[in-house]
Image (cartoon, rainbow, N blue to C red; front, side, top):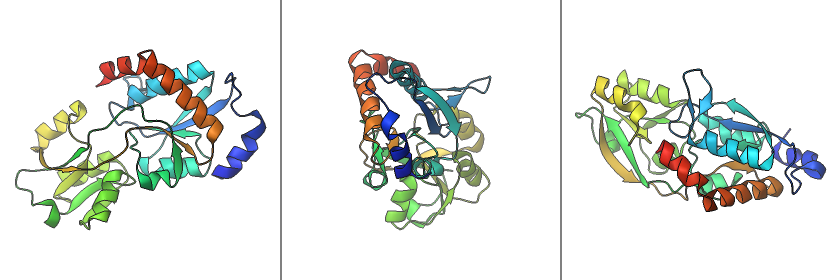
Length: 236
């Protein structure tokens, strides 16, 4: 069922003022620490997982989670597979043309990094690995760099490790989960570039105003009562 068909089908019963027992399917990519992670038992956790679970509790939504590749999140909410998608997703004009975003609940650092061995060439002449569907891939394409897109971040880092790429481009700064990789491979933060966006948010099917209103109301409440600040303090 496509995006607009999904909204129409849910129309009469979707998101009454009290929230009710509406079931939502949440799409995300795991792991992407600290936004979405898996704990020792394999269960989801992380900043955005706990944020969304709090929204589900406050709005009395029954939330089911489904993990997929990052590149499938926006298409998945467009074709009705997911009601909400999230996972360190930056708001960009290109994505706004495809989906509707909640209000941002975190402002992101505009600086992104190319990583690689100290002897790596400049990005302008390098073979670059990047994760498919990310704003990093879009930036490389817009600026005419030589890159290959991989389905997962793990595939990107593997390509760099194996020499299939000279550099990797992505959200690699201040990532404790990558410390072992950097140490084992001798990888360093080499070249930084500014990539502007409008903050981190969750996305819904374009035109799904009732759901968007419920999400934004909960986010505003959580900003006002300190819940989001407490989650940021825990995870960042």
